[in-house]
Length: 249
Ligand code: PGA
Image (tube, rainbow, N blue to C red; front, side):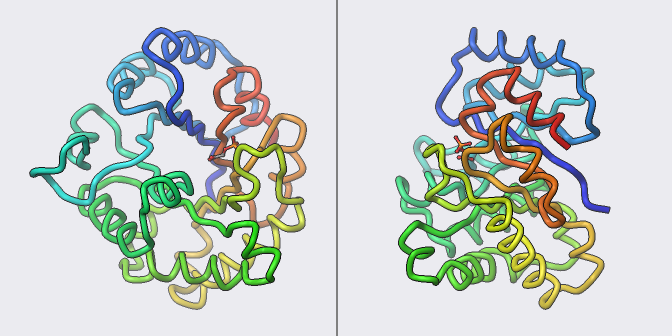
């Protein structure tokens, strides 16, 4: 069974008081869908978010982690540190990490392996740049990202993987992939995983779409057969917008 999921990637937004205000609003909001709701605040707000959401169904994820378990890695955070504050899900491979912090698919494979061995769930992001799409290489680029970062993991590990296809040209730009473009790529991704791992893995794999998902386009995107939800940036910073997206199934 594929789970419906809406995850909010807050990026470097929301200090302590903004976190508390937004989470209070989310706690009060009415959920009419059965989607999993996940919020990903900055590292400094994780413990606070976990505490504020205790006893609710809203889950907390981190936006990044280091592949090492400990050591001389100034400014970095390990899987066990995240687990220690009650966070069991981590976003890995966001396009901003790839482009601004030079995270390669090989480095991301190490992070995925570390997250899995630390018993964490991974939301793995990938997607092509505009130039890839314009030159018709988008399927190849996405296949390569997926294979390099994820095709060494065991079939059993896929229970702990959520994929997030995020075409870079649609992130924060207000431009979304059309529902047809999203569906076409999601079907491609699902068939790649199927070829490598077979039916059991594929039928329970959730593939989220990310890139300018808003209340006014979520329903159409989520209604595509291979789209299981969304990874939301900008619109996740507003409780009404986020909940409208959560309820768009
Ligand atoms: P956006 O961001 O919804 O603001 O386009 C999506 C993301 O970066 O995950």
